[in-house]
Image 1 (cartoon, rainbow, N blue to C red):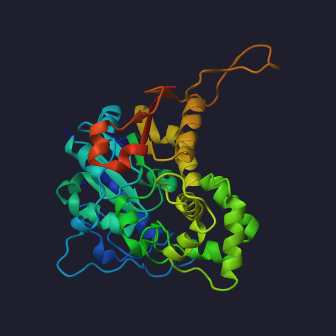
Image 2: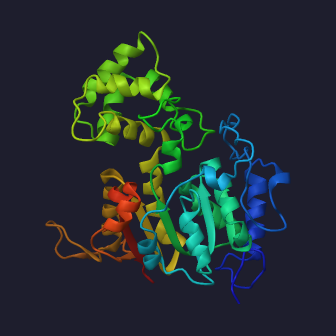
Length: 381
């Protein structure tokens, strides 16, 4: 019998009815919810604007703009999943398996996992993504749960629900096409919008706060560490000088100031690296990625698989180095009399090199050009 989220079964290693009850209890105890919005009789997403973890101060109301009248959510949130077929080949979804889609987005990867008969727990910080996925995947409601949260905390949710481990994890890192193309979100240096960049619109700080409040030294560090911008000090200096006259509030304003002191190289806009650095710093994306990778061994069943899609060298380096450390059986150092078994050994690499998008996919979706997919399988011991 195929396990579902709605029907109780005896195997606690699957996302059973008992697990759903555990999830509901956890939600009612830890999160403040508009309970009338939760479909208690059939598990679906949580389309609420009030998800505040206990112990944290209450966040401001969600600032996601309302939908135009008559506009369906699935058409407003457009994001084509990259390396979809390659990721599915690694993950091997099938009936009875449970997957975590750590970056739900519009539900592209989750839809394919569900179509293969698997069950999916989808996570995303973005309310627009949660609502779009909930509508797109409504027909799979008995096999699908969506939570608005950062994936770095998924271990806590699984522990509370009674789901010991899952069969697979997928994470499609970075910013979505929808977020880039929506000027009001403040991710793009090519459209004028508020200098925001929050993945979670309930977050307290924005990119404008960092630009207007952090010291010149700290801004230079952010631009160099998270953007790999060689002229980070020059950029920080001109930003601090300008903000003393007039604070930054708009994306194009910041982009123009950056472009005034950085030479243009090739097709890339001079502000590209600085905007990337601000986004990574504000949302602590690399810290969350490290947490996910460190927790993955205990989240996955033996034989379970993890697939990570990254879009720039900082992300890919973290994935590559972590997988290498977790898949090396023996360690050796000059000062040791003999090699020692690696205490962190937990994975088998599924590919030595990252998988890249085909020329056909790149022609169809140019943003797939920089995508890199790495995958690993959980060892039995």
